[in-house]
Image 1 (cartoon, rainbow over the protein chains, first blue to last red):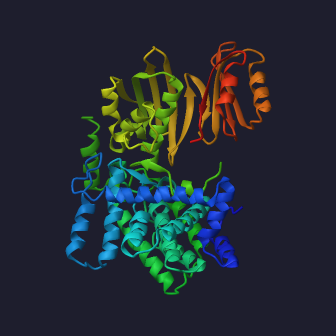
Image 2: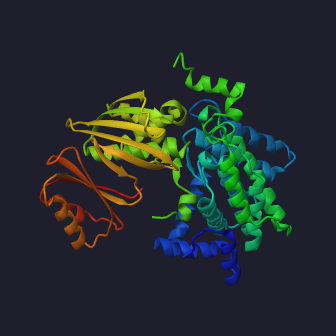
Image 3: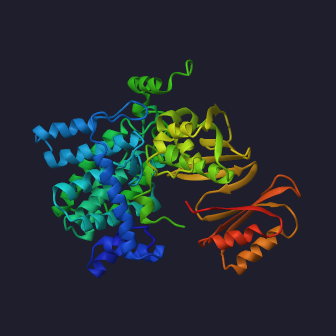
Length: 296
Length: 221
């Protein structure tokens, strides 16, 4: 059984068998969970379905979060790209709109899939559902790529962290982008090594990213960080597919992410004690939602 | 049980926060399970971050949803307070100070239609995981990692032996065992984590053992 303590190991196993990382992982997890591969694929399929549903339910202009602070930006983004190619082009802008939507839906108590966390729940759906719906990739291949994504996440979880409170946003949105970049690369026919490089390149770009949520809620700037995570994932996957290697191997990038996370002060790790959370506007928004100490 | 791919891409949950929403539903659900009666009243106290940010995370709705028996992925979670009102259930919330407790702690006291009460104190420790500190004043330290059998019994010699012997005959492997009691010879609680699935036949047999008051299965979360 695989211990998921290194991505290099996953790449080696996949290359040895001449198959995708996802196939190695699926077989391993089926054995570990004592279920059939079809049962596992069904379970992953259920998650993909919830991701699609969260996208379809979040494109309304009147979507509003529980706190009232956010909502309706996915709708705006979708309206924008309808008439414009923008700078990123319709495909990426639509994926960004979808990621924003899922994150807004999360903030309005919608049903989402934590991938790997609720705070970063928009990145994977934004990218993968766009590949499914707008680039014609087959559902079974998109599904399989999620096993590769999850394996990357397992290694990060074992060697570093997936929690903002421990590693800042680099651990949540950074990990989501890295996981998704690997999935995208596999989906496009990249080799196991290229998937690992894509993950490294994505994660490298998120090092030092802090968790500084305004009012302590998973909204500002979390929703827009999901938007950025989509772009990071697509960019990293394209770079890897071009045959460009990451100079630093992915397992070392993960170790770096861990040490950077440890170096971050508590004020920047999901305590709303610094960064954007303590800006003038950030504090005003906090008072707007929760009242001030005097008039609670 | 160790992490699987479905813990990384997953859980499926009602947002926005696995600790402040999904974990809160789970805590409420534990209280509901312990009550073993239809809920008439729910009195909830929040401490720490639950108290300060609960409003924005829907923690209040999440706990009520759990008290109604919902799971953290049910679509009705955001509407739980309206549903509770429709059922005529009274509920109150209070923010309190608990200096030594985990930052996401709730004390949930439920009153059943028959007058029965159950009080659960627990914390949402991150990622949707929970840690139940006590049930009805008795320390349990329940985490939901394994199938857990909770046995209310009278603290008499042989009560525990009867249960563990039966588990042996039923070929159930005990992963951990914990017992706690309010006072010697009084009501006590066994908390047994098992690696196995627990069929109803096992629960029914445990219920008729000497000195056992009641048996509840808390399935692995």
